[in-house]
Image 1 (spheres, rainbow, N blue to C red):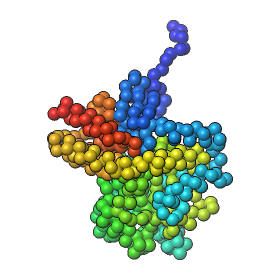
Image 2: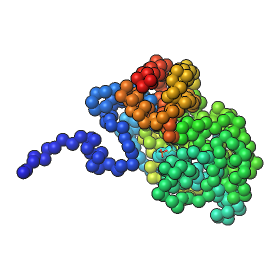
Image 3: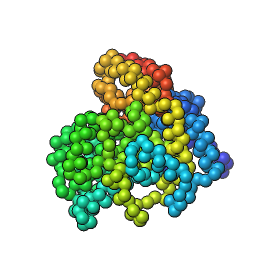
Image 4: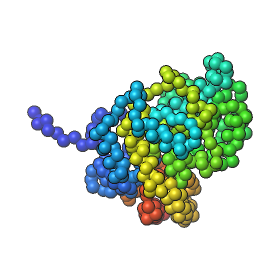
Length: 406
Ligand SMILES: *Cc1c(COP(=O)(O)O)cnc(C)c1O
């Protein structure tokens, strides 16, 4: 039998046939976004409290950001790092304005930013060891950390589900208990080059470094000539109600990895390095073809423009207070389902008493998109533009799902 070959294939079928199977995706196909809203191909709308995993800081398709990308796309998209481009210079200046005196390296993702910071630690160790390689290269990270899927970052991510199957890992990583300064101090020896931390652990259930712990780690690093490397890929760029989450503790790291929110949806990553680390990269010892393209940097500049003009960081700090209170109220009302609510600003984790996957599905069916974190946490990541009304709406949707189950 000859069938006519005009078979319409659904997106679901295309994924089943052609896309690698490393994700268990939600069964919706998203086709359009505006502000805090997403629409699927069946016409359902959703309040998007994933922000593409803390990426779409300005929500979807903010007009200033779209116009900046359109303008730059028609002018020049890519030149490589063989040449200068005004946008990269300007975005570096803006980041230094937030982070402090230093220099910036641009890449394309959080994983690459972490990878670059790990290489900075190696070069710092080399200097400490008087230029002798393989003497001083150890990095102390935290249990339950997440530093991306590349070999360096994965080796700094002591989670079986992430490392399994990929050994041997990069050597030289040791792990302390988050917020237990003694456990970090005990791991330091003359072979240690750096301490690497997420200011707030995003993938393992929203666990924050306490300000005292961060200040203690800063002191340890000063005493032992270690670099303090902070992974702000998820918690940075305004999400916690400060530009960087470490500002809440009043410390300054030696290097910062950032990515997710920086481009507002355009892939871009960056490392800022302060005085002790900013001269370690020299011609030839690190690089990237795509890092810091005119287009990605235009998106980054537009994102920072909007964050500043619309006062989004203060907005997050302000409206998150009542939201956190309302979520804590839900935890009180439904202790059989919610074990704890924690986080800062627009980076919130709701720890459930059971597998969060059915809850995430139930919330999606009620029009609220959220994302899991760790084994038992529902993560809420509104775009920084989310209004008090939209935050309140999220609480009512969650309440509805809890009541339906109660
Ligand atoms: C997402 C994330 C990464 C990895 O970023 P990618 O862009 O997915 O490579 C690294 N560190 C932290 C803290 C993250 O949240």
